[in-house]
Length: 204
Ligand SMILES: N[C@@H](CCC(=O)N[C@@H](CS)C(=O)NCC(=O)O)C(=O)O
Image 1 (cartoon, protein in one colour):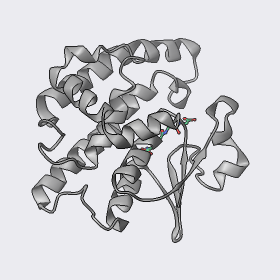
Image 2 (cartoon, rainbow, N blue to C red):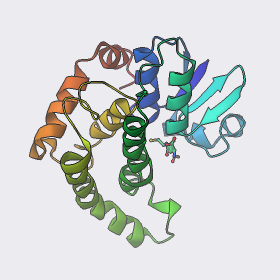
Image 3 (cartoon, rainbow, N blue to C red):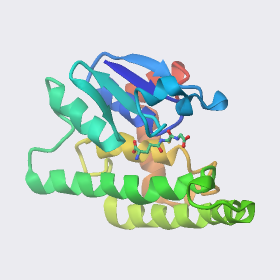
Image 4 (cartoon, rainbow, N blue to C red):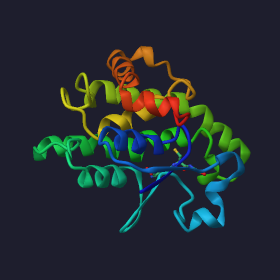
């Protein structure tokens, strides 16, 4: 399998999960500094011009949550989705929230051109990011994050997803130390061998 990624992006949540599940993959870096994600070559992999994309023997999968579920399903252990239907739904509740709300809040910092044309609109959107990300942090802290992992004792697909977004907080103007549980969660994930390996590889 080939994972198309860019450092520090949501694609690294996929890389963490692949490492946790001991799935082998080739990491293919897309260079955002040259706009490679919008190139004709990459459009053949992901016409949306985004990372991650996973090339499998059956075809290409995009969208972080879908790739995470696929990785878990093909892994021998399938250990990152709970067997219990309610717990699995709670995991997906977190993942959908991250995809539809928290990641989108973050994207307003650099990607305002997706939603508006005027420069003043971009500036306004960028200025709002510390507030919207802080609101999301408070929601996660108070409602979603059991401890030590999102669902409690067992790690799930929601953890690398949330962790990766936590790595954006400083740049988004949010002080994670204002959130006791989130701070502990990030420190715990920082020390996981999967995360350390990707940091040494310069992916995170
Ligand atoms: N809904 C997609 C969003 C992916 C996404 O927006 N990725 C960002 C990096 S975090 C990207 O590729 N941005 C490139 C761009 O906007 O040009 C997913 O969850 O996979």
